[in-house]
Image (cartoon, rainbow, N blue to C red; front, side, top):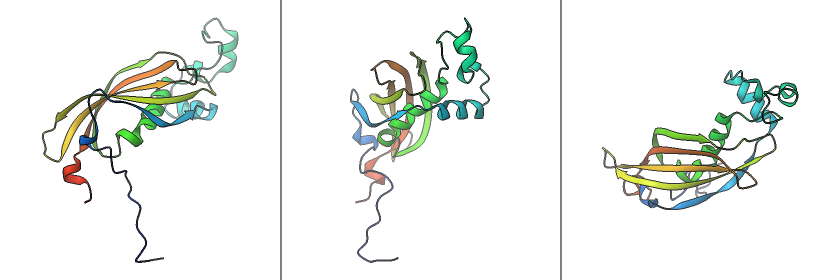
Length: 167
């Protein structure tokens, strides 16, 4: 249905451009995500991770090798969820992901745990093009007990508001 008075909602927010980030800023992202058994088992199997600590409850509860006494969520899932939770604030104006490093998985995550994400702006610099700049973030994932579970640095090429924002 076409209506001349109807406005199309923008696909991205009015912020999140290169100019909107300040080195040293720390933000807590709005949402959390409870990690379900389905998340862990489905994704672990999809990526062909054969470590049975992620999907064999019997082995994890009965064996001395089951150091956690229960299945533990695959760290790649935890990292992905934290980056996903941070994306609304740090990736809407992203032109390119340049890198991710210094990934640390510090505490185990189990089915039913909830992850929350925080982001710190570490660095801003000019890019090799006028319409964008480079920002380096450190993302943190904490569980419902405020235990740090995930830490990673991510570098992105972000649009400059001066060139891309609608006026």
